[in-house]
Length: 604
Ligand SMILES: *[C@@H]1O[C@H](CO)[C@@H](O)[C@H](O)[C@H]1NC(C)=O
Ligand SMILES: *[C@@H]1O[C@H](CO)[C@@H](O)[C@H](O)[C@H]1NC(C)=O
Ligand SMILES: *[C@@H]1O[C@H](CO)[C@@H](O)[C@H](O)[C@H]1NC(C)=O
Ligand SMILES: *[C@@H]1O[C@H](CO)[C@@H](O)[C@H](O)[C@H]1NC(C)=O
Ligand SMILES: *[C@@H]1O[C@H](CO)[C@@H](O)[C@H](O)[C@H]1NC(C)=O
Ligand SMILES: *[C@@H]1O[C@H](CO)[C@@H](O)[C@H](O)[C@H]1NC(C)=O
Ligand SMILES: *[C@@H]1O[C@H](CO)[C@@H](O)[C@H](O)[C@H]1NC(C)=O
Ligand SMILES: *[C@@H]1O[C@H](CO)[C@@H](O)[C@H](O)[C@H]1NC(C)=O
Image 1: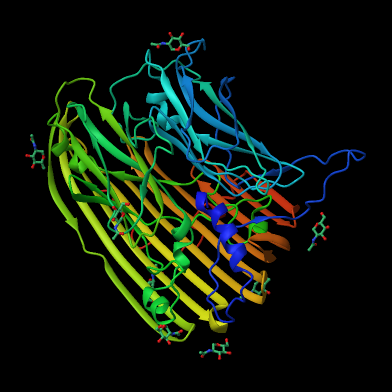
Image 2: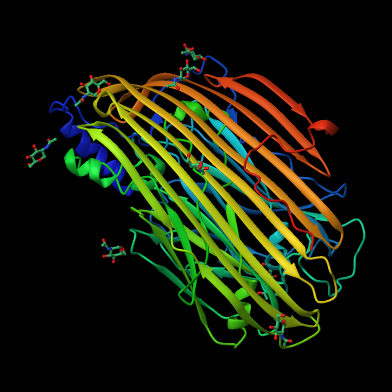
C-alpha cells in the first residue's frame, strides 16, 4: 500500500501487459481497489446514503459523566503523499470546568467517495503516537467510518499544561483521474470527567489505572515530509533514537507501533529465497515468511514484537473488508515492553539509545514508540541496577520440498528474552522481571505451478512481568498470552492477458488471555476474535472489476468485570446477521478452550 511508485508502476505494468504473461508465474497477492458500481448516479435518483464501515471490537467502558468534547482537526486529505504532516495546535481542555478525567477517547471520523487505495496513517501529539490506522476504501456512492480509541493512557501529554502541543496527522494520499477519493477527516477528543475529584497521591504504578507521568516520543522529529515513524528498509537497517530519562523515574514501559507495507505488506506469505532463486522469480518479494521486530536499548535486546498479521482494507481481496473491516485494520495494535529492569542504567541523566530493526525485513516497515515513564513524587533521585539479562538466540528452521513452482515449506522459530533488575525509590527496593516467550510456525504450500498458495501461520506469545515488593509476600504479576493465527488460501482460477480470476479464503484470529494480580486483587480477561472470509474477484489492470466477498466474525470477550459477545456476517456489502450480547454467562466466563496456557500466575 501507499506506494508513490505504484501509480507510476501501473503505467509501466499496462505497457507490459501487451506482452503475453508466461503461463506459469507464481501468483503473489497484492493490494487492490475496486472499480465496481462505477456507473454515475443520475441526478434524477436520490443518491444512496454512504455505506458505513466498521471494525468489530468491544465498546469502550465510559463513565456516566457528560464529556467535554473538542474538535482538534478537520482536514480534507487530497494530494498529501510525501508532504508534511497536517498540523494543528492542541490545547489541553482548560475550558472544561472539571480538571480530572477518568476516560479520554479519540474519535476519528472520515468520509470518502470515489476510488482510492487503502492508506496507512498516524496521529501524533507532541511526537507521541496516539493512533496507527488504515483508511477504508471508498465506493462511488460514498462511505463513512468512525474509529474510537481509548487514549486515557496518554493522559500526561493530553493534559499537560501550560505547554501547548502540536497534533500531527500523516495520511499520504494521491488523487488523480483514476484514484479520485479524497478523505474528509474530523478528529475529536472526548474528555469524560471523573465522578469524584480524586486527589493525586503517590501510589505505586503497577496497579491498573495509573498512567505514566511522562511519555517520551521515540519517533522522528518534525518538520518532515512524511510520517513521524522510522522506515526500516531491509534486514540490516536500524532506526535509532536518543532520549534522556528524568533521574527520579521508577518504572518504564516502551509501547511499540508497527506496520508493514509494499514488499512486506503480506510478509507471512513471502516465499523463501531458495524457491525464488531456482524458479528465477526476481520480482516476487521473498526472505521467507518470518519477521521479528527487535528492540534494543544501548545495543542490548530488551524485547521483541512478533506482530499480528493485520490485513489492510485493500489486502487479499478488498471485497472481504466491506463493511466489516479486518481485525486491527482501523486501530492497529501496539505492543508494550516492560523496560523497568534496565531503568538503573538510564538514571545517570545522560542520553541513551533505543534501536529498532526487523529480522528478514524487505521495504518497508513503519515503526516508532512511546516511552511511558513513572516518576517518584517523593524523591529527586532513584537508583537501580540490571541483575540478569538473557537474550536467547532465535532458533529457526526451514524444511522444504519443491519441484518447480509446486512445493511445501515449513518455517519454525522460537525465542525467549529475560531481564530482571531492581529500582530503589520512595516505595522501597523493588525488583521487576520480564520474560517474553515466542513460538512461531508457518506452513506454506504452493500448487498448480504457483497459481495456488495456502499459508497457515501461528504465533504464540507469553509476556510475563513480575514485581517483587519489599513489604509484601505477594508478587504483582501481569501475565499475557496471545495467539495470532492466519490461514490464507489464494487460487488463481483463470488468467489472460489483462487480468485474472482469484478465489480467496482467509481466516484471521486474535486471541488474548490476561491474568493480573495486584494490590486490589486478581483479575483476568479472555478474548477470542476470529474472522473468516471467502471471496472471488476478477482483476483487470490492477483493479477489481467484479466479484463478491463474504465475511463472518465472532468476537468473544469476557473478564471478571464484564463481557461482550458479537457475531456478525456480511456478504456483498450487506449485513446478514448481527447478534450482540453484553451479559456474562457465568459458565462461559472462563477460558475459551484456548490450548496455549502452559502455566498460571504464581502468587508467591
Ligand atoms: C496555547 O494555545 C492557546 C489557544 O490557542 C493560547 O491562547 C495560549 O496562549 C497558548 N499557550 C502557550 C503557552 O503557548
Ligand atoms: C539497507 O537499508 C539502508 C537504509 O536505507 C541502506 O543504507 C543499506 O544500503 C541497505 N542495505 C542493503 C544490504 O540493501
Ligand atoms: C533460470 O535461469 C537460468 C539462467 O538464465 C536458466 O539456466 C534456468 O533454466 C532458469 N530456470 C527456470 C526454472 O526458468
Ligand atoms: C535491592 O535489592 C536487590 C535484590 O534483592 C539487591 O541486590 C540490591 O543490593 C538492593 N539495593 C539496595 C540499594 O538496597
Ligand atoms: C509448531 O509445531 C510444533 C510441532 O508440530 C508444535 O510442537 C508447536 O506447538 C507449534 N507451535 C506453534 C506456535 O504452532
Ligand atoms: C504442479 O502441480 C500441478 C497440479 O497442481 C501439476 O499439474 C503440475 O504438473 C505440477 N508441476 C510440476 C513441475 O510438478
Ligand atoms: C473456501 O471457502 C469455501 C466456502 O466456505 C469452501 O467451500 C472451500 O472449501 C474453501 N476452500 C479452501 C481451500 O479453504
Ligand atoms: C452484489 O450486489 C449488487 C447490488 O447491490 C448486485 O448488483 C450484484 O449482483 C451483487 N453481486 C453478487 C455476486 O451477488
